[in-house]
Length: 217
Image: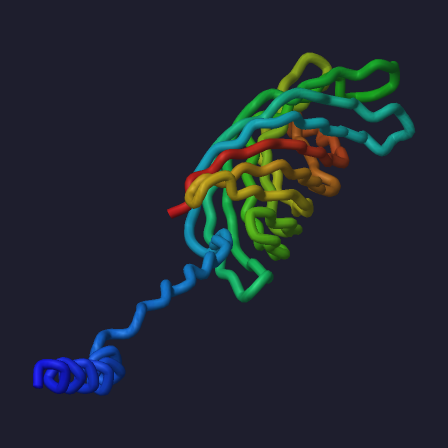
């Protein structure tokens, strides 16, 4: 009788084993972690400062050598961008001062010295973004304050023209941008009236290479 009861218990246990195992919760497989690369976002507003070198030319257009000037320029800039995929479009304005001076090296000219000080630009920009790098071109309006010296008389005058250039922006951190760029400024022919009886017409242009650091909001 005892053997019969033991055999019955073993038979019931064996039969119920699979169903009990089926009631246990299954093993949870770990969820794979997908790493999404961070892409720098160029959209938004920014504000910063710049500093660089400047080279200018003053040509009297009377057959004498043009005056070559060189110096520095620095100031503040600000703007904003919108981004469509890899394409970035924006607007920017800047203003600053400095000293870009030079003097005549030959006889025959009426202008003996020049100095460029204040300068400013309002530009539109278009660029191609590659994550943290942005290659861009820019075009717009330029203004500068030019001082000319003729026969010992100095005349300071604000002139207006156009500017074009290109550069590279780098997103150092999420909200910090570094830049290196080149700008050309063309002011055309401008008349400087040193007296009521005399006015000198000169052709003005300059080149700027500058670096900038900006904070993006």
